[in-house]
Image (cartoon, rainbow, N blue to C red; front, top):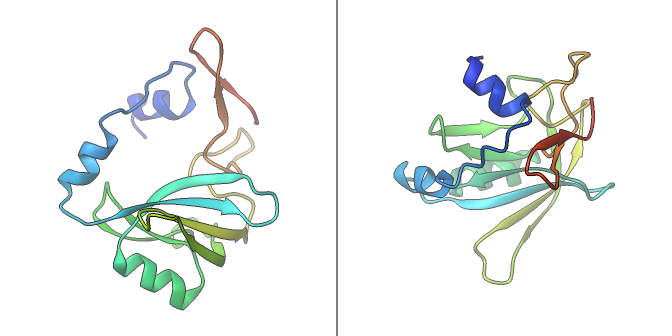
Length: 140
């Protein structure tokens, strides 16, 4: 991992990517945002993007599947890390322009970043923004 990428994922400086949707649009793929939420705890684990191929795969195989907007390929959550998210239910919002995957975490976490002990973090929202706009980790 590059030093810049590590600083982004582990640092305490707020570096929000307000260009993300422009980058997603630039891929040329038609996608919807998908919120991935633990069915039992209701904790939001991550947000991804889903195209028709990803949705069809997820519904057929009952595993959280997105479209990787950075790699432009099908992203079966857990295929490389082993940290699968079993798909319990799929919901669509009122305007049919976003999805909610209710999942059961099969392993120990859903985030690709790791805690100090090497285990994956449970979810991707492991830092809070403080009053002075710095980041503070909520778990290690």
